[in-house]
Length: 282
Image (spheres, one colour):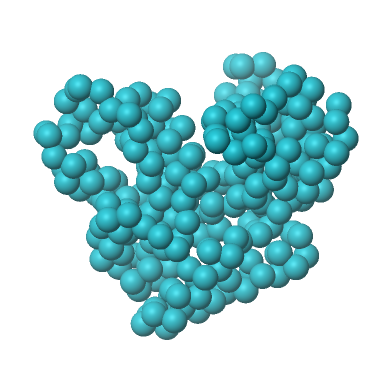
């Protein structure tokens, strides 16, 4: 066990669960400046104030502290060992205790975990992270990205096939309709739309996760901006109070596609506090 990695990963999880990155703070400030609905403007200001207090105190951004999702970027000629993975996992457990994470791990065997008949563990560290996603990069360092995923966006997320009819606009229009419906039901808006398009459900979901790692509020592609603008016209607004900021930004990653009549799309309408993300070099 590498104690340095354990400590760095634990600190990174706490940062992910308690801090807005600078580009997200800037996005909220731009939204506050341009929002015309006074109730919506107050919500945006309150969310940003909450984030600033959480960062100052290293306290959770939300009472749903989230499930750790990990993306490990493996640098060129870098090594990933079993000891490193074990140290990362121990760091996640320590970070969940320090944050502290909300106890959400369910006791029991497969059957009992599904029906929650034995209740929950009190120790936040019992909450196992999602499987690690590995990526190869040209960097000379290994980087670990930690994202904390809440339950509300997972409930409103969707992974399904879209018949593209040889038109990108057909796929984008379907995504926009999904996003309008999910943001209306989400509650915790404004959201960040995370979208992955792949050849299978697994690929689409993994690209959705990578879109959150690689995306920035400072830049949107033409397709991302089209989705953001169209969904914002729904006038759901922050917390469903109306206004022109249902979505702060769209992060989309398109992977390889196959010769087929369908595209598999994964959409996660991340809540007003997501993406909760932090990165550490290992």
